Image 1 (tube, rainbow, N blue to C red):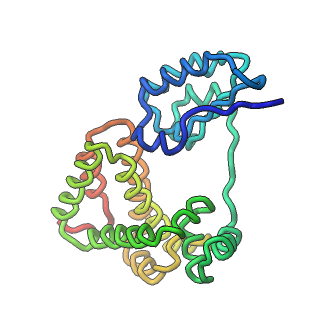
Image 2: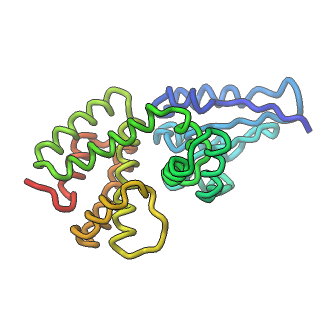
Image 3: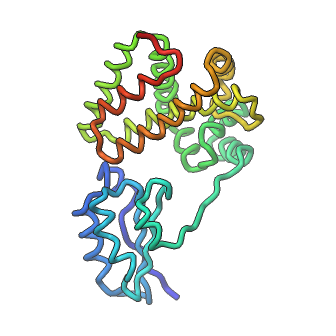
Length: 263
């Protein structure tokens, strides 16, 4: 059976900075068209977890009764989708690759030495495409390290410095750089997840293995309940931002719960 694949590419979705109802209505008009070649049309919607609530609701009828010749595939983090969307789909959970496989691919395909390959494999969380992309962009690796340095520096500064950072990120968020701001929080989340693992004595591998000494220092100084509470707060803040709360208030509130923060 011949299959025709159409839909939004990941780069198109990235430019959308959030999938809005006009995008979905255009997609629905395309879905209604019968295939010119082959027996079916396959529509792939990347980053479906960035659907606005209005766009999600607009999709419900299409997902419930798609045309008989169309197959709709939504690529998303299921935990952030509306329950009404999930209930109309058949979830297919995709796993991640073990670190050693990602590291081997980085050595074979990107020519990284063993140490650098291990670091990027740990950062990747099993996402080999992400790791290879980063391996070919040294500037992105440096930028990621500098972002983490900035986040860690905020923890040692007075609270007004944290609020200034929150103001800067909120301006970026309102200016259309939502994914950039969420990437900051995802990076911080991975750091505090490592702190939690070390503080709890968990044998699970950590992401920031190249900064183990710094992680151990924080894990020894902060109370385990405070670490867990703040890690939960980061996740909540990311969800609030996706739900269009005031970004500056959401980020400032996050810093109020930072373990060991200064007044």
